[in-house]
Amino acid sequence: MRKIDDPLKDAISRLPIKEKDKLLFRLVAKDEKLVRRLIFELLEGGETRDERADELRTLITKLLPEEGIKALTPGYLLLDIRHWNARITEHLQATKDKPGEVILTFYMLAEALRRHGAMIRKNPNRRSDTLAPYVVKRTYALLKKAEKLHEDYHIEYRRDAQEVLDFIWSQELFAAWGREVGLRKEV
Image 1: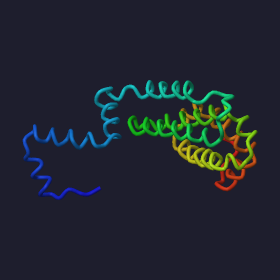
Image 2 (image 1 turned 90 degrees about the horizontal axis):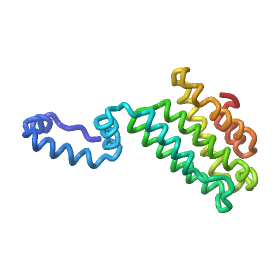
Image 3 (image 1 turned 180 degrees about the vertical axis):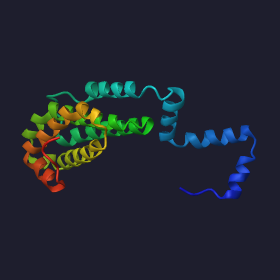
């Protein structure tokens, strides 16, 4: 990001308030992340973090593909997981909810693996060659973030995290990736 020179800062400071507001609105509208964050902080008062996380959890439960869909493959499941991971990241950017990111992402991964573990096991390893590294690397990164959280939050993600780890270590391809990144077996 380019730094604003002092003479330009002074000139902007001298602008009439109406003109500053107009420029500010134009600039804010160009940054979608900033718009979401301002909505959360200014319009919602920053008080709806837990409600937003609960709503996102409900959406994940409701909209993650159901078990038994014949057309679903590990590759298509990965697309869904990435979609929900992006939604969780949007939640984090708007609310700065770091515990929520860990809790929601472990929930989403565990739910996806609960629903579609049989499909993943049934398909040959080559069908999971993109899903396995994604899940393992994401789990590894989440565990690193979880270490930094206050211990009171650990109970909220521990069961889901252990389910994900158990799945990873029970599958040959996933376990190979787990060994490669140094993933532990227990939460």
